[in-house]
Length: 496
Image (cartoon, rainbow, N blue to C red; front, side, top):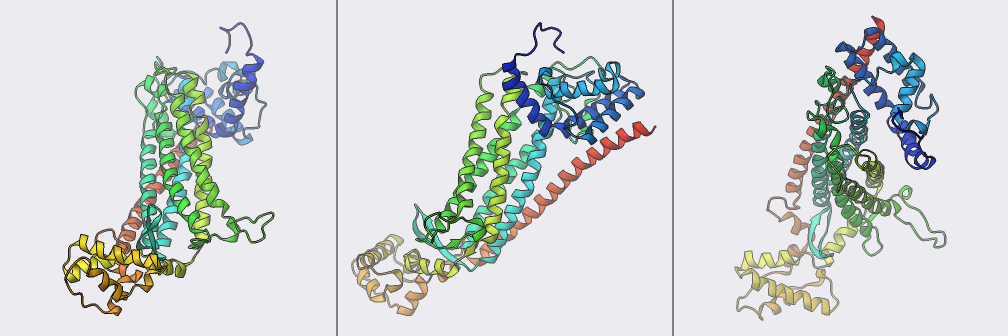
């Protein structure tokens, strides 16, 4: 393979470039390397480029290697890459005259770019399943907590009461959008580059649609240059990972804050925590800390991929083919860890409903409802109502009183400073208006935290989730059907 070159690969090149890449491909690409070779052999046999007898020998050798596994032979970095190691193994089994035909009508460029897409496909499909599980977990929590009232925050200050269902349904919506982005990315990933050659195609009468079908792709990327030069699917998927990471970082940070003694809204299960080596009272929610931090690695991968593709030609080069994808695998591993850790944490955490409700009733988050009631019942402008309630709250805070201690006399005293109207309210009605559950249930607008409205949103999200699960199952089934067809046709050759 190195006839043009007068020297063997340098030890430095082998140590830092060839050997690590070959070892990684041996572990990651072995199964897909076999599939691509099998599909290519079937195709060139079908097209009359090689004989049926040669195809039998090649496919039989590939199946034997597949059964032995990726440790069947010793890897040699002097052969430059993993494919040449595979090819040399096949030649050693069937001879140069037959084994040398396996590479007819293709290049390593289209071979590796096809395997790259298959490897990425293999990594993202399980991520869909985990994201679907997360959405199910979130919607289950939302359904269970339509009556659980807690404080909603803006600027990290108590704002208005909502329900835990409202919060979890919001996160489920965001994760649903993240899922949609990654699902759409699959549609552009799942195209085959095999048969594009080095970049200019081939003069052999190959059938690219056939190999695409056998390998589970939607079809070939037609332009042979674009086929080997494109890695934009890495950018799109890693961008989707990073966007999902942003959603999860914010979510995990909320949960993390809620575990603090000052909030005390939730408690992670003992199995999700560690203790201190010195402080016996400690229970540290480490899964949330790792989840938050791991989301940063998703962004790092996107930046790495993006910068590897910056300032390079639109064609094949090792910046693109070898280096751009390197951190994608770490991003996939981080995504898996984030989803598994988050699902486990959510399913086992304890929610302190009474603490949530008590805080919402005491921390003045309900007083916007009082201002609204003044507008509705007394006909004052909202700005006047805002001034009245603001004065009441200021006086209470100065006196160290919680919202539950607001009296009708305090309200009447503030009213006199802004209007001549007389408000004939009872303490009972004031207490009703300031109660957090009533504040939530009184909400009428679309998308509000009222239990009925939350249920409607949960139902809509669950309907979308059902459809996404069906689409996911179809995707998995179609891929398996293609592989079944591949091996059925390979076996048929060896039977005939």
